Structures are given as C-alpha cells and as structure tokens.
Length: 182
Image 1 (cartoon, helix red, strand yellow):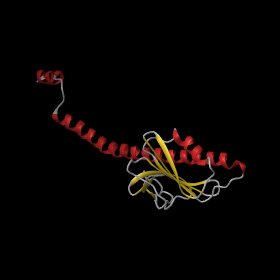
Image 2: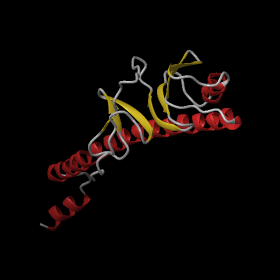
Image 3: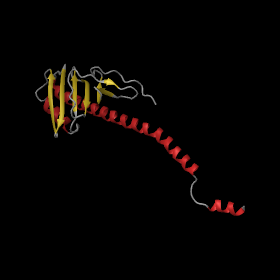
Image 4: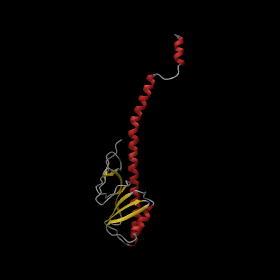
C-alpha cells in the first residue's frame, strides 16, 4: 500500500480533470477579456478622430486670427478639404474669405492632416463653429452631412456608419453622446 502511495507521489504530470479545469479557466478569462479589448480599441479609434478634428479646428482658428487681424470678417463660410497623395486641397463651399486665407490654411493643415483624411469646417463670425473629420478613403463630407452619436461610447460619432471626429458646437445633426456604459 505504501508503495502505491509513493508511486502516486513520484508520478509527474496532470490528471485529465486538472487539465479540463485549467482549460475552462482560460476559456472564461478569454470570454471576459476579448470584448473589453475590442471596446477599448473602438474607443481609441473614436478618440483619435476626435483629436484630429480638434487639431483641424484649432489650426483653422489660428489662421482666422492671423488673417482677420486687420479687421476682416469671415462669416457663414463652409470649407471642404481632403489630403490625397500628400497634397492637401481646400475648397470654399460657401461664402467668401480673404485672399490669403486658403493658402495659409493649406500650409497650416498640410502636416497636421494625414493622407486619406477628409474634413468639413463651418465658420461663423471669425471662429470655427464646427468640424467633421474622417479618414475613410471613399468617404466624402458635404454641407448636408450629419454626425450622430454612438451609444455606449464617450465622444464617439459616426456618419452613415463610418467613424468620424467632430469639434465645435454647431455640427450638423450631432447631439451630445450618451454617457458611456461600463
């Protein structure tokens, strides 16, 4: 009898039950962690787009301050822009701006905006009132583009299912995002 106990003690390895328990614990941990990682990844995407929209807004406000220093007024202007192949192109959709505004804005945003980015800026009375920013290559923004808040995420917006960043307080169709759930 003592021989059998000694052999069991000397035996190396796992029993089938121990192995199944370990696999079950790993499966439970995976089931809990994978959705969290996916959620954090999605929130990081939205945060990156929000930061880019704020950068476009801040750079535009800086250019507006520079251009309007001598008393010019930029009011009720919408600007579309995109960067493809390393070249940033900006178009005034509506309204008129001082002669050097587009040139200075292009220079200011050239390095701040990555390739494939699209943005739409609304300006009212010498300040940016709203920006919508996207990086999807097939995506174009227009004056009628509306951004909608994504449920369950903080500062997350989409336009037709495509993640976008927004900045300012006059974003067409954008409402404050609902509180994030944990």
